[in-house]
Image 1 (cartoon, helix red, strand yellow):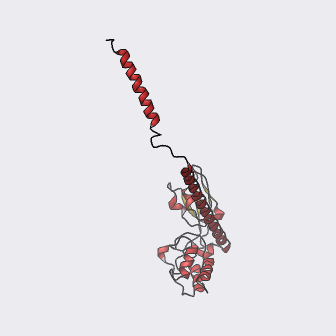
Image 2 (tube, rainbow, N blue to C red):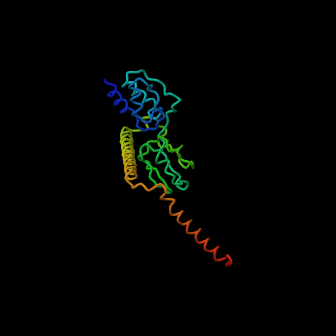
Image 3 (cartoon, rainbow, N blue to C red):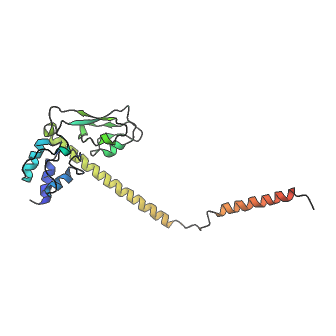
Length: 220
C-alpha cells in the first residue's frame, strides 16, 4: 500500500472534528503524518480509545493509550453562544473549521448545532468569553458519541471552507494585481505639480499684502 493510500484510509478512520488537538492543522494532515511515520496513532482525543484501535488496525501498529498531552477522551460537546453578550466581532467565524457559525460584523452570532463538530476552536477566539461548550452525549464518549455520518458532514464542510478560503485568496490577489496595473498605467504628474497651487496662492497673498502696505504708507 502506498503512503497516499494509507493516508486516505487513516483519514477515513478519523472523526474529522478538525480540532487540531493532535498538533496538526486538520485530520488530513495528521493522517499523512501517521502514514509517513512522523506521528503516533494516539493523538486524537475525539476518536478516543476506539479511534486509536481503528488506526492501529489500519496502520499495523500496536494500540497505545491516548497521549494525555493532546487531551482526554470525553463526551461530545457543542458550542453555544450567549447571544446577549456577543459583540459581533466575527473572530469565532474565522476560527470555525466547519463554517457552522452564522453572523455579521457587529451583529449577534449563533451556532448551527447540527453542524458543530465540537472542536472548541471558537472558545479561545472569543474576546468576551461568551461561548460555552455544552455536553450533549454523556455518558457516551469518543466514537460512541460521534457517528460516521457526522464525521462525513464535518469533513465535507471543512473541505468546502478550505475551497472558499482558497478562492477568496485568489480573488484578493487578482484585485491587488489589477490595482497595481491601474497605478502603473496612470499618467505621472510632474514632481512639483502638487506644490504649484500652494505656491500660486502664496504669491497672490504676498502681492495683496504688498498693495495693502502701499496704501497704508503716507505719500512722500
